[in-house]
Image 1: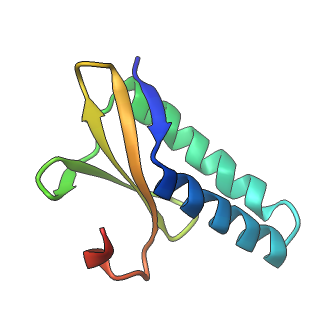
Image 2 (image 1 turned 60 degrees about the vertical axis):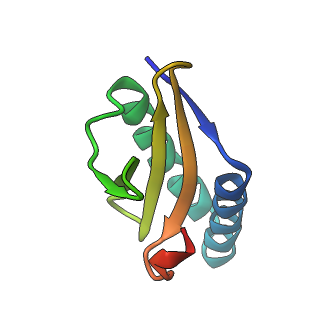
Length: 96
């Protein structure tokens, strides 16, 4: 099993999204976080399950209930999943 580590950009994006969802409806931020946690667990168990899409080695997970992607790469040497972005699907992909 791989450990999951978020880069500062991904941590910031997660916090922004959590806060925004909580402002919309109390508890919705927690639902967003739980969905992310579900995918982080799945990624840690099988990091190559999700397709590579960006810059040659970045995997992409499409969240089921929220309009976000988890973008990550696999550090096989250190058994780490590095989450690069928690990306809202309405953003410009060139931002990556």
